[in-house]
Length: 315
Image (cartoon, rainbow, N blue to C red; front, side):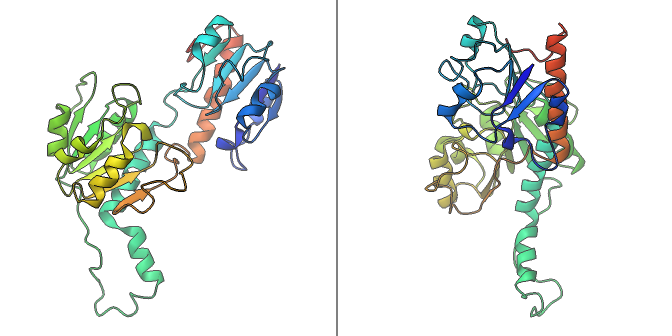
């Protein structure tokens, strides 16, 4: 069995390797194939494993032996599902591998906004503490999480994990989700109410027709002027131009983002110099343990499919 990885560098590095896949067959790794090179490189593959590589009718057209596509991801919008169904190509994704990692990163962003650890570290590294008149210089204001209201948009696995952490911080937790979910300590509310009541709004819903740019100028205008907006879901749930407007005009207090509409970040991204905006480069899902878990899920999916007991089957 020939297995081709089309964008290995999005998962594999010197700490997480593809050796478990090599137990299943011959593995050919490509760091990050350009779109025009994909078709030729996977032409003789039995299995293709991808993260964000676009597999459509053009890139799949030469892959006559292809039986299976495995995803290093939960989402599969980069795969032409109709083409795969028509040509008998199975597609399996990897669900729930990053729940704890993304919840952890969500609070890393929140805590940075509330505790300013990076700013205070820079204050010390710049030698300014040495010249401080007091032992505890109040350079940047800090805030407690206890007693604050966090509004969670999307109460799936990640949203639920975020709620549990918030409850441990003694926060008030409210949630807006497509299918209301009963969870102790969490109040289900409408979207408008969530925006109006929350000190922190954090997004954990999938990107689809309903959620696309749901956070626009109207949404930000309903939020508290000191509220923090956090997005570790998908960049497309936000209108970046409207978020920039909200930040620059003090409609909200700040934003903390791990995803943007275009990734890697564009040179002329409107959010590059936005006020009170923390941005990390889509790494919430990527701790070493998480990527090793992901590799294990992908390998097991392949084994199970060829053993006749498919798991995480999309089509």
